[in-house]
Image (tube, rainbow over all chains, first blue to last red; front, side, top):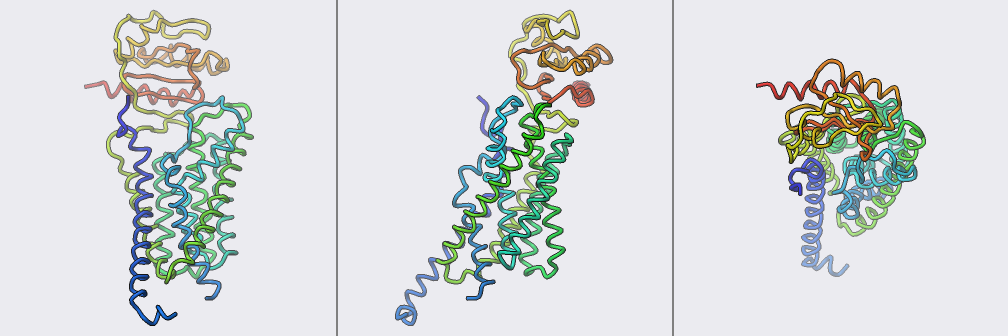
Length: 48
Length: 346
């Protein structure tokens, strides 16, 4: 059986494209959650 | 909210959609299935479709172009130019049998993401013609990448045009489906964002980073490259050394299509450092003649013999390297043999 690392050329480039997208999505999710929490504390917004 | 920012925000979210719907298939980027020129013709449509749908490089570029666009109409124009560009080189390069260095092509494709990313970070481009020309130019390069992958699958001499056209149709259908999903899911995501406009710069930054990292990975691969294009019809890759060194030396340097070469002897001489060329016995007579000349003249360190079981027309085997060719390519075979023999010299 060939070790998976022997085929690194196949997937490592995909990971190079994939990781920044994941990082962006995580950032997007975190900022949204933070904003929702902060707006939840804001009585003005709550009344809206 | 006016139409322009709304569209831009939707485009931002399109990037999210790409990652939400495609993670599993994207890991399988490249074309499913190995070298098999005898696969059914309709399969090429499916292969083209999956290549586009599972191709992060192509999808992120399209997403970047949509992000840069001011309106749906501009996006449609730019994506059409991209499609025309990659179709042109996919068809031309495949039909002409061009095989450019895949590392170079893949690196330029990765840099196309950097281009759209940096352009977006600097603000929307004011020169629409320059952007259109760049998108068309990168489309040409993406098409060369598609052609390389398609040729790796193996294409028979007959019915080449219909296979390439079907593959291209599959690519375009895949692109349309991916775009529809990206924009559709993107719109849904944008509606849930509080300040979607603020996500644009990070999205362009993400594209730039993805392109730079991918270009670096492609340009500086660790260790020996797994496959190397050699000549117009051949690809070289690493191979396992022969397990058994039993047998002796075959008495001939060329075995005809109807002859049977002693398998143990062939394995033995591969272990000795000789290049063994196995070919399909149904090769056209002219190609057989070229192969006969290659094996019987010049270097003594070549033996050629038919292999009824193999799918590829020509396969040259050395102890740790292997060359597969879609036809008898004398230049490719000679280059493989010479480099192999040179690597054995102290």
